[in-house]
Length: 237
Image (cartoon, rainbow, N blue to C red):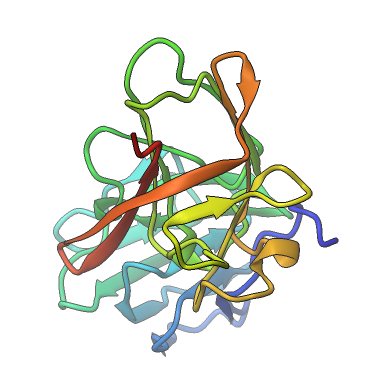
């Protein structure tokens, strides 16, 4: 069974090579991970950076990146060096949120996709406690990245899991059983697919209720906000 230690799974990969020139890269129609090489890549421009695209930098550039009016992002840090210009699909400026590091890369994605009130599962193996309050755990699996092996304890009827790609429902009955591995397998870009249960390209979640291990979760509804579709899961009744 594939592990969760590979960062880029179902996304296309576009490497910004260390050629020292100011290149212009045009985005693809599917989720794309733009990988910044360690070296002098130049001041590149990425056109049509979509909401399901990601930037993978060889070093951290902060917990959040506000590009400002000029749209410039310093991929070698605030002290200078190479800068990127990200142009959104709508022609606007793209601000980024940090998704953690894995497999030698630091992952960033469009900050607007994580809605207010979302607690995000990043590419690392995260552990959350839902026993004291109502939580909405967000997994942006449309990025085509593996979001790690997470554990959520104390998950109750007032808690939610929200994804940007639908989770495989083998029986199409709005209840997703976890199978023999007893964890929730997340789909990736282009999902859901029949292979999600053993490839889990979006990562996995060990979901535990109060005092017991959960073996299923229910699909509740979907909604579209600013061009992004969000799939809501929880305990139905």
